[in-house]
Amino acid sequence: MTPKHPSCRAIESDLVATATGEAGAAAARRVDEHARECAPCRAELGRYRAIDSIARGLRHDAPPPADVAASRSALQARLADLKSRVLTYGIVPSPLGNILVARSEHGVSLVEYLGEATTLAGSRLRELADVETVESSTEIARLRDELLDFLAGRRRELGWRLDLRLAGSDFRRAVLQAAVDVPYGAVTSYASIARRVGKPGAERAVAQALRWNPLPIVVPCHRIVGSSGKLTGYAGDKLGLKRRLLDVEGVRTTPAARDFRVAREVMYVRAGDDRAYCLPTCGDLPSHSLANLTLIASRAGVEALGLEPCSDCRPDLHPIV
Amino acid sequence: MGLGLFDDVVAAHHPEIYRYLRRLTYRASEADDLAQETFLRAYRAWQGLAPDANVRAWLFAIATNLARNHFRAESRRRRAYVVAGERRAEADPAGPEEEHVFRETRALLDRVVAGLPLKQRLAFTLRKVHDLDYEAIGESLECSPESARAHVFQALKKIRVSLNGHELPAMEPTR
Image 1 (cartoon, helix red, strand yellow):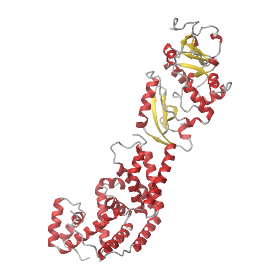
Image 2 (cartoon, helix red, strand yellow; image 1 turned 60 degrees about the vertical axis):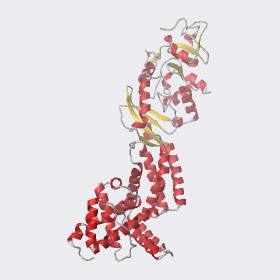
Image 3 (cartoon, one colour; image 1 turned 30 degrees about the horizontal axis):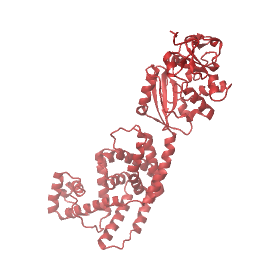
Image 4 (cartoon, helix red, strand yellow; image 1 turned 90 degrees about the horizontal axis):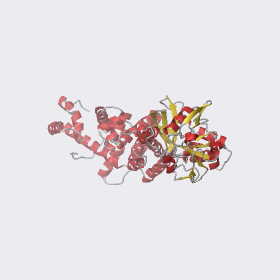
C-alpha cells in the first residue's frame, strides 16, 4: 500500500466503524465528507463494507441439522445423569450448631450436624462417591426457614419430600420410613420399629440404621429410644442434641446413669397399634418395657392421631398436668 | 429458580452455542464435546445465577472460556486452520460470476479468520456471526468492551490486508 496522507490516517478507525455501521453520526459524517474527496479512501470504505457484509453472511452458515440434533440428545443424556447426581446444599446456623442441608432433584437427601464447622470439610457429603455438590443458599432458603421454625417449636411438621437413596440398603430405608411415621411429641423404641419393619428382635440393626440416618431431625430418629426408656444414643455421640429435640417437642427427660430417660410417668401410652390411649398408670402398663409401646407427650398429640380414651383409666377425665 | 427451567435454556440456546463452537473448531466431535461441557458447567452454576442475568451472553462466556482452554493446545489451532483451508478448496460453485466471487471471498475470509490470533478470532466471531454487543464480548474474553471492540477492528484490518489484491463484490452502504 502506498503511504497514506495524514488526513486519511486520521479517519482510518472511523472509516472501519462507518463501514460496519458502528460509527457515531459525527464520525460517519466526517468519513463521508472525506471519502467524497478522496478516491482511495472511498474505495477502502467500499472494501470494508464488502468484508463486513461477507462476514455477516457467515451467520447463515449452519451446521448439518443432524449434527445439531445428535449433539443435543447426547447433552440431554449427560444432563439427566448429572441432575440425578447433583446435590445442592446450604449450611444453616442453628441453636444446635451448623446444620448442613442437601437436596437432590428428588428431595432432601442429607441433613448433617456440623457443629462449629462452616465448610464441607469432614462432612459426609464430601465422602459420597459419584455425587457432585453445588452450594446454593438461595435454593436452600425455604428449607432453612422451615428447619429453624421446627427447631424453635413453631412448626410441628417439615413435610419435605425425601430422597432416601443415601440410606444404603432396603432394610435401612424401611427403618427410616418407619421412623418417619413416629409422630411429633411421641417416642417409641428400637424394638417396636424392628417389629414394624417385619424384623422383630432386630433392634440392634435398627439402632445401627438410625445411627447412620442421613436425615436426622427430618427422619425423627430422636423419637426412638431404648426399651428401658433410656435415650441410648444419637447420631454417634450427640445425645445432648437428642434430648434438646425431644424437649422442643414437649417430651421431658430425666438424668439416668450416664444417660437420660424419657419421663414416661408424665406421658400418655399407646400399646401396639391400639386405637385407644391410656394414662401411664393404667393396669400393669408401668411394668411394661417400651418394646411394644408408644409414649405421647400431650393431649394434642393423642388427638392428632385420632385415638380414643381408654375406658378403664379414662385419660380424658384425668388429663396429665 | 426451579431446576426444570434449565431444560428451556438448553432448548433455546444449544443450537446457537453448538454452531459457535462448530465454527471455531470445524469439527463435529470437538464442537459436540465443548457444547456438552458448556451446558454441564452452566447447569452447575445455574442456581447461583442472578435472576436478571443475560443467559445467552453468560453461555457464550462459558463456551468461549472452554474454547480458549481447548485451543491452548496449539496443535488444535493449526488443525482448525488446515480444515478451514480444505473447506475453501471445496467451495467450487457453478453459479453466476458474482455469486462465485462472493462465495470464494467468503471461503477466503473464513480461512483468514481461522488464522487470526485467538482473541481477535473469538471477538470477531462473537460480533459478526452472533451479533453480541461489546459488553458481552468483553465478558466472554475477560476484557473491557473497548478492548473487545479493538479486537474486532484489528481483525477487520487484518482481513482487509489479507484480501489485498483480491476482487471483492461491490457493496452498498450498510446504513
